[in-house]
Image (tube, rainbow, N blue to C red; front, side, top):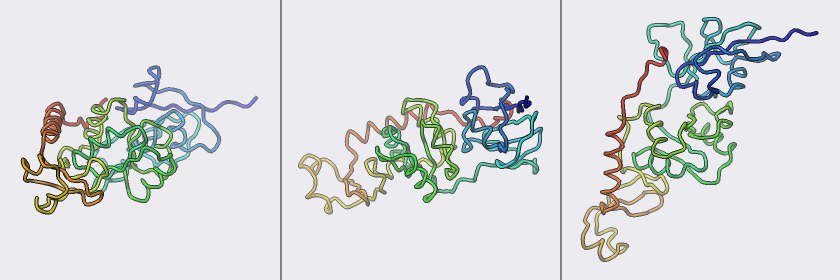
Length: 260
């Protein structure tokens, strides 16, 4: 009878979110298949490669394509900042200065919140996984999703699995995970289409305004993409309050994931 081969996997930090409670914060045994790479093994237990920064096999930092042998211990780490250790191989690609998102279907409210804060956010309520993955690859976008499957596409380099099902908590997750506090630029993007907002003279849009709006407001913005006009009415005050309350509740990101 052929002897079965096994490896051991141990997840650190928030990567334990992908595991059942029986497997969290400790090594657990996984059957090793012939020719399996460390990436294959880790994703087989539910951890997508886009959330992994460092992998070690028996204490040695390795790349995703590293082969496995029976009895190996694989440690899996999220974003890690060991600046003094040059032997560590960081697997997560460095994000570009301009953060760009693409959201999976059913995340329309989160898309509006991200646009409100000024982030380039592509969203359509009818895009399949292949289309999202292709756009993400072509336009260097971060995939935000509640579907783990799309984050395992090899061509998806940047992504995040939203832990919460509630849009406000999802927004907090995204800002914290990607450390975007300093990148917030409220009211610079159209919440409807993601285009840039540009201030325009009142006279240029006066004929398109209702009488009350034209009478009581003087500062206007137009979306350079869809042409929609915005002004600082009661809706603007409500959004300002939302942003103030949201930022007041946020806490600085804890980057010390290695001690979790």
